[in-house]
Amino acid sequence: MSPALTIRPYSEGALSQAAAKLRAGELVAFPTETVYGLGADATNADAVAGIYAAKKRPSFNPLISHFPDRDAAAKHAVFDARADKLAAAFWPGALTLVLPRQADSDVCDLVTAGLPSIAVRVPAHPMARELLRAVGRPVAAPSANRSGKISPTTAAHVAQSLGNAIGMILDGGPCGVGLESTVIDLTTDRVVMLRPGGVTADQVSELLGTDVVMAESDDTAPKSPGMMTSHYAPGLPVRLDATTADPAKYGHEVLLGFGDCNTKGFDAVLWLSKSGDDIEAAANLFAKLHEADQSHFAGIAIAPIPDKGLGIAINDRLKRASAPRAPHDAT
Ligand code: TXA
Ligand code: MG
Image (cartoon, rainbow, N blue to C red):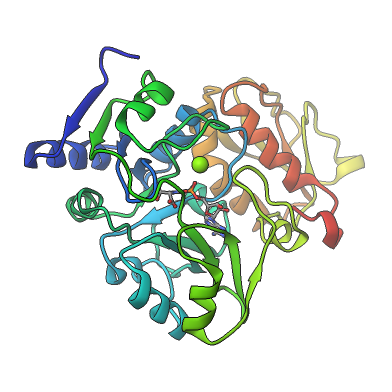
């Protein structure tokens, strides 16, 4: 554990220190009623990239944005009648809603994985709500543990798992639920359960008076075709590990550059990171893919990115973006 790690129990001072750190782009672990979350300002792409670096997550799955109340969430997500009903019944609490994203939401693409949807939750833990109110911005927060390790329900778990990677833990004692929130997708006419949790399918079904469809899913990779197709893929062909331009073969491509890659012969260069920094590249990834995809080029070439650190998650995402576009494997 790093000597710089601060673990602070509830106090006004601790809350405002944590809020200030989050607003400054630092990571803070905080308690919710389900599990401890590893929080970052969801509008700051560098801060969000820091979450993936700290967790050593090998892929960029979309993250949940946390809010102090429904109205704060509604600035970033579009609530229909079903969403309002669920929010009224279960918030604050262990339920996450995946909703269409508001057009003017400033939540960064790394949080939504480039999708037109956003996952929103209002946690019930009083410390979490007070913190979220003080931050005044959406806070992205997956469970505060190394990827693949069990979810943390005490500050000590967080310290053991992430101690040397983060600066501060707000200690709110043990979490009551101990299991991540239920995730319900309302972006279509159906009601789809993406992740089971404290709120059950029966409760949701009874409240809405409709069936709840179960989606096969886990924390690391979307498995069912429906979920895979929901992941952002550019319209243009994507060529990985592009070390040289070849317009005769590939047409006029835009290059997504990294480090001291070869830019000669490409029609344009958009930098993921000119200095070869993996956190900067992760923060830029979705925005640059979108920018390249809206262009008039024949394709998107990607400079080689070393398969280490966040490069692993970046390459995982790019591999999906470059995969054949048949419906059954179009991630
Ligand atoms: O209990 C919890 O929900 C904890 C605490 C800290 O609040 N948070 C948590 O966050 O588990 P996270 O970011 O790890 O949850 C991610 C889940 C994944 O199952 C992901 O697929 C889904 O939310 N998700 C997030 N955004 C999505 C989107 N736009 N579309 C579909 N699924 C989304
Ligand atoms: Mg987790």
